[in-house]
Amino acid sequence: MKFSKKFICVLLMCLSFCGGGLASGDETYDKLKVLIDVMEVINTNYVSETKPKDLVLGAIKGVVSALDPFSQYLENKIYKEMENETEVSHDGSVGLHITVKNDFLTVVSPISDTPAYKAGILPGDKIVKINNKSVITMSSGEAIGLMNDKTRKKVEITVSRDGATNEIEFNLKRKKIKIETVKTIMIEDGIVYIRLTEFNLQSVADIKKALANYQQQGMKALILDLRNNPGGSLDSAIDIISMFIHDKKLVLSTKGRIEEVKREYITAGNGVFSELPLVVLVNRGTASASEIFSGSMQYYKRALIIGNNTFGKGSVQAVLSLPDGTALKLTVAKYYLPSGCPIDYSNEKNVKNGITPDIEIKVTMEEEIKLYAQGDVIFARGKSFNASKVEDNVLNKAIEIIKENKIVENIASSTALTNK
Image 1 (spheres, rainbow, N blue to C red):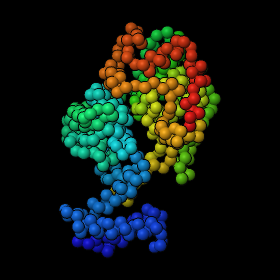
Image 2: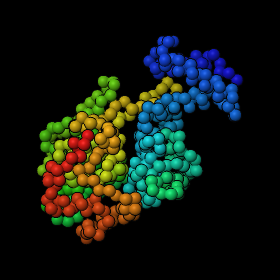
Image 3: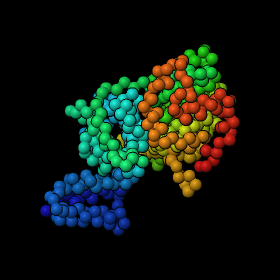
Image 4: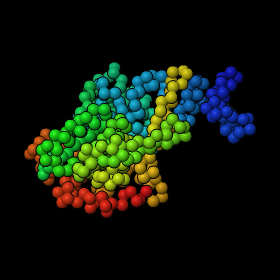
């Protein structure tokens, strides 16, 4: 069966609209005619019967997926269910932040104290199956839909992991998740440790309250742990940056082709904790708003950044509705740090995306698994906490530098920014 003339005309009109108007002599127009020819050949000769609407849907998804890992076409159901680009619903969830990276559905980070976290799923794990269904060609939105299937009490997730010989299977029981984004403790010698697992509207008030309380207890320095923090509210991140920078400073700009997405973010200029010695811990699960925080503090030499290179999520997506009830989630801008570099910048000298720490400490897969296993041992031990008994080289290095009063010295000697 051949495509009807009406169907071909509609397809060409739609594609021409997407292309901003095409003349018959344009190279793009010629390629569109090739697309029609390809669909005709498939429809006539493919081993199984095909449906024109399925082929068109596949073509649309292919066009969008060719742009970047974060843009995607959202079908009706996914569009309605989707909350944001990397996060599954917290109502009956397994607790995973996911995205597409290097053509793989990739774990950005598991949420602390959730089924995924307790089971041992790690940042960087590549999801290959959900409920025994291959997700190799799926968008993050489609995968989220599978994990949020409320008709199932359990979610089966199969991942491939760098260094592992075989795929790893996890059978996770769904549960309602209550996220506690801020956990704090004064560990020793006036050193306060705060783990921030996500930037949200409550994070600002929680951190400000905790620091004010510890200030009365003789706080001398702060370690802010942003490892496995996938980001969240940009406004929250800017407000927290403002706590640590005294003057009004540019910390972020967004740039794209349309004027509506061009914006500059300036700190409030009230920096109530601008004199507090600060160390920030990062790793490959540190993404988006967390990278904005780390990169800005590094640029202004306000904090010492320790850990592993961050995730490299430096773009802005907008969800644009389409007349048929579907939508496009389209990358419309990039984040630019005060240095002028985008977070996902790379060149011949520095092919790493994300933020390069001032002090880079390699963490093996075995060490990372141990860190997850010990979970919240730091907070559970309270005042009896002993850093030397915690197998966390990154945290222990931060404590050592603070005790030796060498934060400023290490910041001054860092070449992390000059590599870009």
